[in-house]
Image 1 (cartoon, helix red, strand yellow):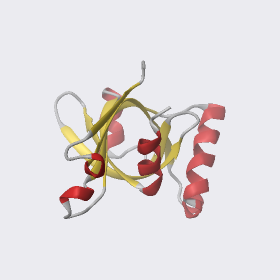
Image 2 (cartoon, helix red, strand yellow):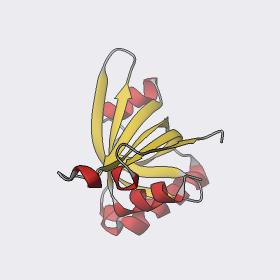
Image 3 (tube, one colour):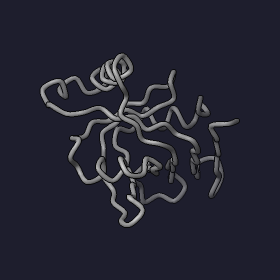
Length: 141
């Protein structure tokens, strides 16, 4: 499980920027997400034929960022993530869907696919703890 300050920050926000590559090109997408703290994963929706999903099908190693927009240097906070993107199967797909719809119930109206980002490394910058203060978490800790 991620460190508590990371989880609190993640829960206060709802958009992550996902970065993908197919080993030739790079692309980013902004995605509404729901965080599942028990399974330590981010769930988001996307159509199967989007550029970022098609690229992740070639290389599922991805990066993501979540940032607080502020002009006050002492309040700067953000999270950088590297991990793997997967489309859950069967029962896990339904669990991921429930996680997402609990946070964004209106998404039940949209025909889309659910995707999961499993973090392998997370770095949080929090200037409230001191200028440039970093917290690092690794999957193998």
